[in-house]
Length: 96
Image (cartoon, rainbow, N blue to C red; front, top):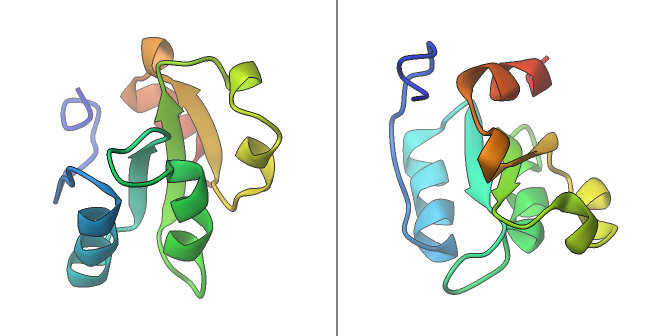
Protein backbone atom coordinates (compact mmCIF):
# COMPACT_ATOMS: atom_id res chain seq x y z
CA UNK A 1 0.00 0.00 0.00
CA UNK A 2 2.74 2.49 0.93
CA UNK A 3 4.93 1.63 -2.04
CA UNK A 4 1.95 1.88 -4.38
CA UNK A 5 1.37 5.35 -2.93
CA UNK A 6 4.90 6.52 -3.73
CA UNK A 7 6.78 5.68 -0.54
CA UNK A 8 9.92 3.56 -0.62
CA UNK A 9 9.85 0.99 2.19
CA UNK A 10 13.44 0.28 3.24
CA UNK A 11 12.93 -1.72 6.40
CA UNK A 12 10.60 -3.31 8.87
CA UNK A 13 11.00 -3.98 12.57
CA UNK A 14 9.26 -6.52 14.75
CA UNK A 15 9.72 -4.65 18.03
CA UNK A 16 11.09 -1.48 19.57
CA UNK A 17 14.66 -2.71 19.90
CA UNK A 18 14.89 -3.63 16.22
CA UNK A 19 13.20 -0.34 15.30
CA UNK A 20 15.94 1.60 17.06
CA UNK A 21 18.68 -0.51 15.48
CA UNK A 22 17.06 -0.27 12.05
CA UNK A 23 16.68 3.49 12.28
CA UNK A 24 20.40 3.85 13.07
CA UNK A 25 21.44 1.50 10.29
CA UNK A 26 19.03 2.54 7.53
CA UNK A 27 18.64 6.28 8.33
CA UNK A 28 15.07 6.58 7.00
CA UNK A 29 13.35 9.91 6.45
CA UNK A 30 10.13 8.65 8.03
CA UNK A 31 9.14 5.87 10.43
CA UNK A 32 5.62 4.51 10.67
CA UNK A 33 5.52 3.18 14.22
CA UNK A 34 2.86 1.12 15.94
CA UNK A 35 1.85 2.37 19.37
CA UNK A 36 1.76 -1.14 20.82
CA UNK A 37 4.99 -3.07 20.32
CA UNK A 38 5.88 -6.40 21.95
CA UNK A 39 8.69 -4.90 24.03
CA UNK A 40 7.86 -1.22 24.34
CA UNK A 41 5.49 1.61 23.54
CA UNK A 42 5.73 3.46 20.25
CA UNK A 43 4.75 6.57 22.20
CA UNK A 44 7.87 6.16 24.35
CA UNK A 45 10.08 5.55 21.30
CA UNK A 46 8.83 8.42 19.11
CA UNK A 47 10.83 11.13 20.86
CA UNK A 48 14.17 9.30 21.00
CA UNK A 49 13.83 8.13 17.39
CA UNK A 50 13.11 11.60 16.03
CA UNK A 51 15.51 13.53 18.30
CA UNK A 52 18.61 15.30 17.02
CA UNK A 53 17.55 15.43 13.40
CA UNK A 54 16.32 11.84 13.32
CA UNK A 55 13.51 10.67 11.09
CA UNK A 56 9.98 11.94 11.40
CA UNK A 57 7.78 9.46 13.25
CA UNK A 58 4.11 8.84 12.53
CA UNK A 59 2.29 6.67 15.03
CA UNK A 60 -0.46 4.21 14.20
CA UNK A 61 -2.74 1.96 16.22
CA UNK A 62 -5.89 -0.08 15.95
CA UNK A 63 -7.10 1.87 18.99
CA UNK A 64 -8.56 5.36 18.49
CA UNK A 65 -6.48 8.35 19.51
CA UNK A 66 -8.80 9.26 22.40
CA UNK A 67 -7.89 5.95 24.09
CA UNK A 68 -4.14 6.58 23.89
CA UNK A 69 -3.79 9.52 26.24
CA UNK A 70 -2.34 13.01 25.99
CA UNK A 71 1.19 11.67 25.43
CA UNK A 72 0.15 10.95 21.84
CA UNK A 73 0.42 14.66 21.04
CA UNK A 74 3.46 15.44 23.19
CA UNK A 75 5.73 12.44 22.51
CA UNK A 76 7.63 13.91 19.57
CA UNK A 77 5.71 12.16 16.80
CA UNK A 78 4.77 14.10 13.69
CA UNK A 79 1.23 12.77 13.95
CA UNK A 80 -1.10 9.81 14.33
CA UNK A 81 -3.06 7.79 11.80
CA UNK A 82 -5.51 5.12 12.99
CA UNK A 83 -4.92 1.79 11.27
CA UNK A 84 -8.40 1.79 9.76
CA UNK A 85 -7.54 5.09 8.03
CA UNK A 86 -3.96 4.18 7.11
CA UNK A 87 -3.06 5.05 3.54
CA UNK A 88 -0.20 6.64 1.66
CA UNK A 89 -2.22 9.84 1.31
CA UNK A 90 -2.96 9.98 5.06
CA UNK A 91 0.77 9.73 5.73
CA UNK A 92 1.63 12.26 3.01
CA UNK A 93 -0.83 14.72 4.57
CA UNK A 94 1.28 14.74 7.75
CA UNK A 95 4.71 15.05 6.13
CA UNK A 96 5.88 18.66 5.70
